[in-house]
Length: 586
Ligand code: ASP
Image (tube, rainbow, N blue to C red; front, side):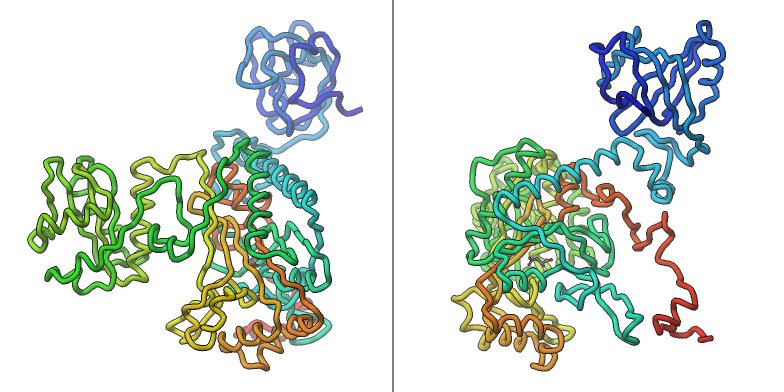
């Protein structure tokens, strides 16, 4: 028997028992005649003690144990004199009488402790060692728990987990595909799924009724903290259900996870707000509703007063950002830079200080009367003492800039409280997005998303105004999931492809299999997919998903541990009929 107990389970109630433990040497300390070794495994840390006087030979061997050696120790549990109340095993230690070295370790490249001296790149290279640190390990265990709870809920609701293939054809989620060359059919490629979208719809045509899968998806996009080239979705689809039934079912999943994982319950139904409201009031389609600070549009009130910035702007909007006494001139200048930086792209910011004596101070004060400012204040719910921030520019850029400013102010004012969660549904997204560069419409969600029935008539006359039966689950400003009611009628699907600029032939080539399937009795259906990594990271209280993935890639999409992507041999290239452009073939 290798062990009788783990390193995380012994307590005073076992005092006097003979035990055998196995694990890694976290550290050892020599104090006079005693040597203490912290033994670590997945479950915790237990202190081993060796006594020089009682067993010189054994203690001598213990002194030679290096960090991360794998050992087995047999001994007796006893009460510790110097107790550590911070760990569950802190009241006991093991007086060891037999020690076996199961394996030696080289000195690890960084200290395997919470406060490690290893930089990110080094820890990624030796990820298997980083995973020994309890915080990283706990993230992976949290991930496991969330996955179990997802399965529990989905199963209880009658959903069936079905695996779908990884070598497929291009899917229409709008990102770049990863592709795999075929050896057997020279010159052809599989694409890795950006999502199993079309396959789950086919499962509905097959009559599976309710499907889910915790599934890996692949998108070749530029990376950020919350993006990885391969990531995991909780992918779901159901038949014979309209939008509200779908939302209720998955609100149920969200509630189940919050309850089981965080012990948080929500007394009210999740709010539903339209995309239009989200953009108008929060400047984003994923509002953080942990705080209010709604945006008010001032375009009509503020234009026509000869103030050049406003008169030359399509849109003017403002927020009331708390008390003005806190803000120096330098700080408000910083905010101006913030909204004007190229990523935000508003034309400018005008600060209005609503003084406690009821007067207004602003760089734009000569263009507006006190009554004008009072009218703005009324609209923005500003009181004497408040700071009003007014942003102007093209609507397409000024609204999001104001949205970012709102978040920035929310953070500065401490209104985005960690550990508080405000979930909501954003609904009624536009069906299509116009792209100036290519001068065509793109599906805002994907081309299988159903237009709202009442907007169907606009499809050919005014496509930009058509709203979709699409929805996102947003929590604290993060899009946790998104989905839609699907088109199940082959004619509407063809019309959608037409509006998207696909010729009949192109649609047939790319999605013929789906259009064909729709000819054999497709039920009304819809679904959603959740970003599993993101959700787990949110439950773990962090922004970056990387630490919740056992073997993640870095910001350039490299796995530095496996050292990949990497070259393949000439022979493999030949078999795959591949040559690198610009390189001489053999
Ligand atoms: N396939 C979609 C996505 O990955 C989600 C859905 O519509 O169910 O975003």
